[in-house]
Length: 219
Image (cartoon, rainbow, N blue to C red; front, side, top):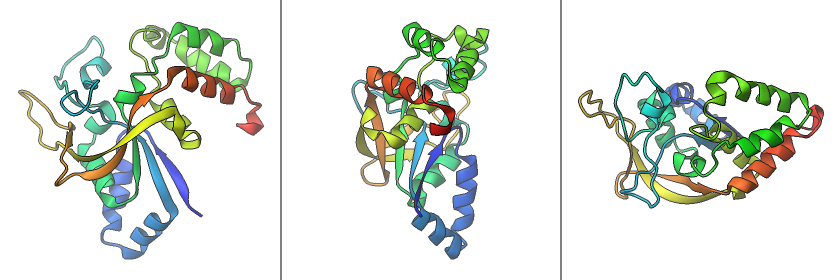
């Protein structure tokens, strides 16, 4: 049977697996025949490629302790650009849920209020996470539906608008003016990737709250 894989965080695990498969034809065949798609939260397309563009989030992720400067990359790609490159090039179709889409779905106080009113264990668990002081400070400011949006699109891809781009990932590190992990649109050398470039906030809110309201056995 074919499966869809949700990839959140860096690309190290899948990159390592796919790199191993390059020298193992049986493993490569099994992966390519049984994984229909990878839905991957990561990346961002800058304004030079699409309008509105999305800047990087490395410095924002570091919070008050910005010890490294990179204004063009997204965190999940940045922590292992080689792993992400291997994933892109392996041949399994990828839908990339980029910051361009997740920026459209900020976690707002109105959403948290509705979430807090739901009494299922899973809703109460997420409410408790968002109530943690470091997270609560991000509600209405810097938190967005990053991984949750990617997960929602597995069963409801219409929540996002997508467009195909031929992409490369900047690999070289430059500590003076770092642009490593930047997504580069290159129609000659790039790999065709389906990129989520926009999302419907209210539809995402509604779908997330609907699912998290279901009895646990039905989720």
